Image (cartoon, rainbow, N blue to C red; front, side, top):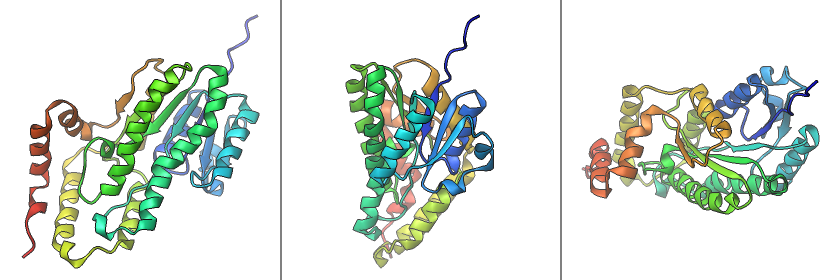
Length: 288
């Protein structure tokens, strides 16, 4: 009688809502053991709480080093291994650069970049010892192309992409893979609500008032004109990245951003900038 192979385990950050929650649901539905980590475990979804033998709900705040170490140790103690790490936790500042405070700037990088680095650092010794594992970093279309009002989010995601690519070369020597998943235009998450809250706290010089108004309208028009993906769509791409057993580095997760990603990577600098400036041409109008 043959025993069944051990179930695999995924640790996901930021699973209280959005991509993280959808991904935890999907992996659990396909028989994986799931470490659903979040800043506030008391807010965990009921369907995750209903699977206590398969899902470990634990506190992990990417800005709290002790919570990272504890969550990784709990995951290994409970399930014996971490096969896949998905660095999903993140948020976006929205507003012109001059309106963002230095404290908020640092928080943007602490969560989106340094947090992912520290969670990965905590998991790597275990993965290296086993000579297998996948690290997946959730980036964004904003990690590929620049956007007005999102300069700090862009900066954090551009940095995440550069770090991920460099890390992939290093970890290949240890039998480990690194993947980058790039979603964009997803509205069925709490991400937009957080972004609106952050925008309300920014205070730009009044010289930008006309620009900001036009930028808000430009983004509203983009939202109206595009087919929006869902968190479940992104979860499917994360599943593919985790399980396809390839060395593929980047996965564009939503249709909405593919034209811009393709232009950035394939069209050449002049053609790419012409495309982007055409979308945001009205923003360049001088104040009157």
